[in-house]
Image (cartoon, rainbow, N blue to C red; front, side, top):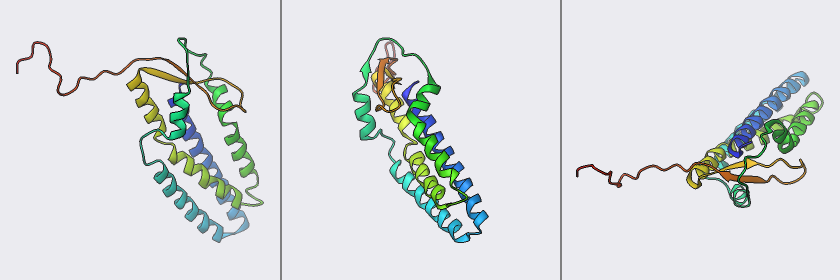
Length: 179
């Protein structure tokens, strides 16, 4: 699976987790008749949205992604494409987090409320990373793929040859053009 695609899907999954947790926390608070929790939840989600927008305001890849790209293993062959397996191996903890936090919504609705805010921060904070990695791929003429490895090992990337984007500069002189 290409790394920019993995990052896009991860952002969508974090947003889906935030949405699911917000829905079950609202249902749990409504079931308990706790309007104060609803007001605090909306305030927390607004603060989380602002924090996520602030964290993800830059269009550049972060230091952690830069180190991950720099440590990518080079291979001339395309890796085996297994998007479902790779997504599950890398993001199993998000599924577990969402299920466990959502399961206690009717007992302790504060837990999914807090979890929804954190998932929202991650979704908004990572929203530009895939574009930054795609720009690096175009600039360097490579493609980065997520390597299939154990779910408990750190993420590793493979670097394969790609296509470099060559655009003419505005100052380039075209052959046969008259000044």
